[in-house]
Length: 251
Ligand SMILES: O=C1C[C@@](O)(C(=O)O)C[C@@H](O)[C@@H]1O
Image (tube, rainbow, N blue to C red; front, side):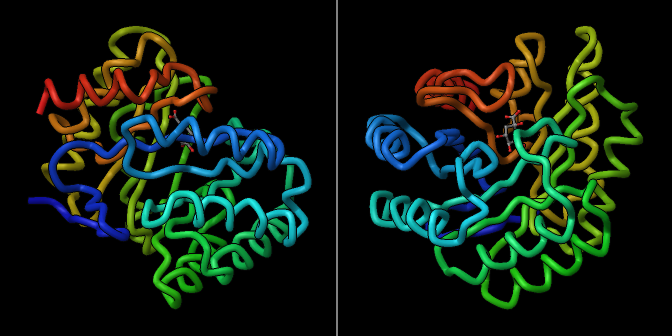
C-alpha cells in the first residue's frame, strides 16, 4: 500500500479518492451561502481559493473567512490555496508576500493543509514545509500546466522533486491537447503509485477531455478529486454529487 496522510478524520491515499470542493467566492456573504450549499453535498474536504477573495492580503479579512469555515464545517479539513496567475490563478503576488501570507495562515491554527506552488522556488517550498510541519499543517505541493501535458517523465520528475522537498502530498494538474495526453497523465500517475509511493499523489487532466481523470483516481493512484457545489475553480470539474456516484461505482 502507498503512503497515507491523515488529516483530521480523513485518510488521503486510503481507499476511494476524497472529494474536495473548491470555494471561490469573493466576499463573506457569498462564502456563507457556499458553506450552506456545501452542507448538502457529499465531500471530504474543502479548498479555500483565497486568490479569488477580495482583501485577502489583510490578515483580519482572512481570519474572518477561515473562522467561518472552521465554525461551520467542524472537523472537515480545510486546504488553503493562493493560486497565483503564473499557475492559472487569480492573484499576482511576489514571492516575499506569497511566503509571508502563507506563513501567517499556517500560524493562525485555522487550516489543516496548505497548497504551495513549486514555481515559487525550492527554497520557498522548504521554508513553508518547515513552518507547516512545526504546527502539524500538511503541505500539498503543486504544479499546474494550463496549456499542455508535459511528457510522462517530466510529470514524474516534478512530482518526485516535490516529494524530495518534504511535501506531504504532491499534485500536478495538466491540460490535454488530445485524448492521448489524458492517457499520458494517467500513466504517469500509475507509475508514481508503482515506483514512487513515498507520498500520496493528486493529478488531473483538466477540461472536458480530461474528465475521466477526475473519477478514476482509485485505479491509477490519485487521492483527491476536485468537484463543484456551485462554481468550478478549473475546467472540467464536475458536480460533487455526480463525482461521488462515479467514485462509488468504480470502487
Ligand atoms: O490544483 C488544483 C486542482 C484544480 O486545478 C483542478 O483542476 O481541479 C483546481 C484548483 O482549485 C486546485 O487548487
